[in-house]
Image 1: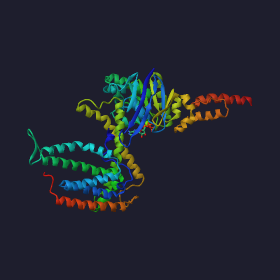
Image 2: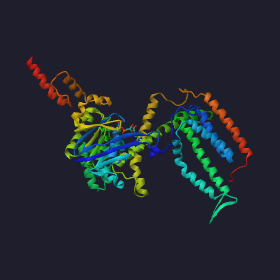
Image 3: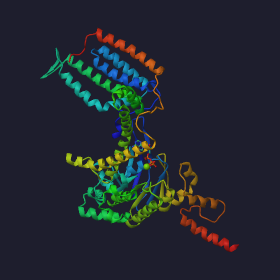
Image 4: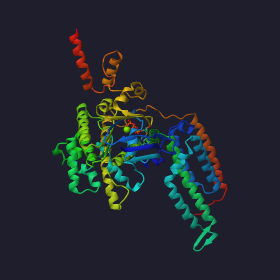
Length: 272
Length: 288
Ligand SMILES: Nc1ncnc2c1ncn2[C@@H]1O[C@H](COP(=O)(O)OP(=O)(O)OP(=O)(O)O)[C@@H](O)[C@H]1O
Ligand SMILES: [Mg+2]
């Protein structure tokens, strides 16, 4: 049930994608999402998607997990592609009553589905291969310049680390509390809206109580280890650029060149 | 007569994911009406998973659970009825309290059964009597109670449903020695008065030895032993291989037995041991 959602989950491994510097991975994820939106013909899109598929294969994360991460967006993908299918312009391919499907509509639908799916895949590669701590550590580093503008970057990153850390804990706790209340006959599956909302009370109250309890305990534990914010704090594991990263950057540059060429030479495949 | 019977019961977490774990593996057991069954096993051996299947909280991957002869999943819509018949107290039950007052929280189960306010209150008060919760606490917020009091209030919340079978998952975990003793006595008392069936999961060999008629030993998701308490605790070596042990006093008595002292190697409690040792010592004294 709750545990079925894999989007945003870390999958430990030793592949070269796991080993790459998290800062590089974040930057590249953002860059490739932008590329997905710049691509305007099928060939340049294929260049981007091909590279993403290559990275996925290198990550050695089971394909099944990638499929599962799509579960959440399958509805959006179907919905937008159907919309696009009917709203194409130009010569009609098929005419069916008031419904007309044009070649342009078909292209749009395919193009946009591929875009959304690749978007999810790209971010899944990042979260599957980067542990939450690495992720926030990298974000902290990348946002460091902002701290000169007095933005509390470290505190922000720490809050994110803690939030991410407690997501699985809270899910597990929700599961437990739900079981306990069901065992006392709580009925969560039937009734109207009002009854269903009321049925949440026995779950939400214990959940909040325990979240606050955990927060206090964590705060005490941090203070008793002399945590006092980011000032003067050093890292145990320094992020370092390695050989892997140089190779990745090289591959990306080649891919980028190919993309630019393809995107300029060939005419746009879609008209929006 | 068997209240609960399982047939080739299995449960797998995370089917079709890389995290697949078979927590309960082909378990066929029967629980006799009115017995006090202790359940033990190393951590992760599938005890909690097994008992959660017994009252329909999780649905078996394969196999059957018979309650008084009927398959509990025959009518999935009526699974709530099964939960009233088989009451379940989870590990650390105090985290399930949520109502404004303690008494309202204890009445939550009975009210869900569709009982009237009066009847629910009557049952709640009876449950309160079993767990010996002081009456002046009943109108307080459950969050203002001490840890031990919360635990007893939560257990009362399940007892108040008057289930035919009561399952307790490590009810004494995290209590001080006196608290454990008192709670154990209360459960024993409850079992005696109501004459219903109790399943009691515990990591404490001493607790189980003191209270259980029979013991189910789980090992790596499989049923390793199901026998009378005396018989199970005779198999010291096998238990040790599963990361379990026998009560300390049993081990001492077994060692004495091996060295030729006239004592029973199936001794389970301190009282039983004293009953054998004191006369023996006296006789030796006299012979000197
Ligand atoms: N919600 C869950 N999701 C996935 N795996 C689980 C889940 N709950 C338990 N498991 C796994 O199933 C196995 C059996 O767990 P279970 O909780 O039944 O053991 P247990 O005998 O009750 O242990 P303990 O004595 O520690 O309470 C373990 O390997 C555990 O990791
Ligand atoms: Mg358990």
